[in-house]
Structures are given as C-alpha cells and as structure tokens.
Amino acid sequence: MVGLISALIVIPLVGAFALFIGRSRNARAIALLFNAVAALYAFMLWRNFDTNAAGLQLVERHAWIPAIGAEYLVGIDGLSLLLVFLTSVIIPFALLAQQMDRGFCALMLIMQSALYGTFTAQNFVLWFLFYEMSLIPAFLLIKIWGGENRDRAATKFFLYTFLGSVAMLLSFLGIYFAKGTFDFAALAGLGKHGLLTGKLAWFAFAGIFLGLAVKVPLFPFHTWLPDAYESAPTGVSMVLTGVLSKMGVYGFLRLLLPLFPNEIKIIGPWLLTLAICSIVFAPLAAWAQSDLKRMFAYLSVNHLGYCMLGLFAVTATAAGPLIDTQAALSGVF
Image (cartoon, rainbow, N blue to C red):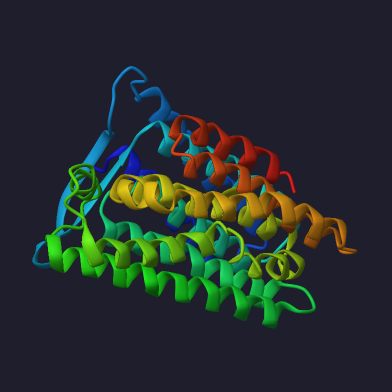
C-alpha cells in the first residue's frame, strides 16, 4: 500500500503526465484539481501527525540501491509538515496568477512534487534527486515563459545552482566514502558525537554551505535572484521566494547544523556577518531599484537574512518560525 507521503509526492506527477499527454485547453483547471487532491493528502498528513511525539513520523522505508547505501526513506517532523503545507498553499496561487498553457502548468506540478520530496526525504541520494528535480522546471519556466531578459536570467540561475549542487554532491560523496552512509539520522549522529572531524569535515562543510547559500540565497551568493525575479512569470516568482528559497534554509537546518555543530561554532561569527550583510545591504539595493520585481527580490534577500541570522545563532527554535513567517509574507509577491 502506498503511504500518505508517497501519494502526496506522486499526485502532482500524475497531473503533470495527464497534462503532457492530454489536449485539454483548460490546463490550469486540471492543474488546480490535482493541487486540491494533493492538499487533501497534506491535510491527512496533519490529521495523522502526533504533535506530542518527537522525531520523524509516518516513515516509509524501502530498499532502493543497497550497493551505495541509497534507500527510499521519507518521513515528516514539524518543520517538514509546515513546509509541505506552505507548498500546497503557494502553488495554487502561483497557477492562478496568470493564464498559461499546459506545458507551464505541467512543469509547475513537477516542481510541486519535487518540493514535497525535498521536504520529506531522509536519505541524501533521494533528497538530492528531488532537490535537483525542482531546479529543472524552474529553469525551463524562466527560459521559455520569462520576460525580455529570460535567456540571461535562466542561464545565470542554472549556473549558480548547478555549481552549488556539484559542490554539495562532492561533499556528500566524501562523507559517504569515509563513513559509509547517506542516512540523515546516521549522519546527524556522527556530527553529534564528533565523528566528522579534520579536513574531511571542513571540506564537506564548505561544499554543503556553498550549495545551500546559493539556494537561499545568502549574501554574496544572491546576485542571480534579482535577474530571475525580473524575468520570471509572476507565478514563478511567487514560488521562487515563497518555497524554493526555503529549500536552502531547510537544508541548513536539516543538514549543516546537525552534521557540523563544531564547525558552526568556530566560524559562527563570520556566518553571522554574512547574514547581517543580507539584512543591511539588501534593503539599500531594493531602494535603488526602478523595477518592482527586482525590488521584491532584494527585500526577499533581506527577509531571508533574518532567517539565517536565527539559524547561525544556533537557535533552531527561533529559526523555524522565521522561515514560515517569511515564506507566508514573501509568497504574496
């Protein structure tokens, strides 16, 4: 029997497939229908979630590629559940923002599925697959349906995120060859007990930090965002700031903080400085813009700077609400 989380991930993919093979002229209505079904499953996740229990819930675990330690492992905790709900809310509004053809709607559904997977996967191979799966539709949506400078914006978005992803992948491969696991819980245990140390730890920390900092984006890795905002269709801009940027913050909370607590403490002041730069300089850049979308892009960098400030202060209890508050506010734009 397919679990609730797996069904949640698959439903938008079924909708995308139906749009690709169908000839309906009312693509947006079909996409919204599948969104409604996915939202129903998200509600069922909430109904089955025990707020008094700690750790992951509704876990689904199946063998996948045992030779490399990859398995299909999904589950939710409070943070994952909130981000799943956030995705379920923002995607329909993004579809309603403007009338687009079935290709556009299908790519939005694929991105929705990838976001659900990113926020629930508990094994790096599976998480990375969903993480990258969300970037391809975003690139195509900007490249094909974007504005006047869409080619430049899409290329810049792709290069930044691709290089960040390569750095992150190399880091996790280094950890796997040294420690033999891709499991998030096992890796967090290694970090907690100080078993990720030395050059390996710093190499892995740097690569994962780079990949996630680009995705947030954190100063000075933010320069792709204003171009993407300006050129992307309005609905895509909503998803970029409301959900996709949360993948980066979520990655910091799920990966960087648990795996590298010692490294965070050592260079914490420098990381706080980057967050403060995002908070201080982004509004100044926003003030200088004549394009409304570019202004909102810099304001988003500012808001996310507050999220990262909370995270780098190692206050996860404060950073969680900051993510969701910023997402709810920014998604409107």
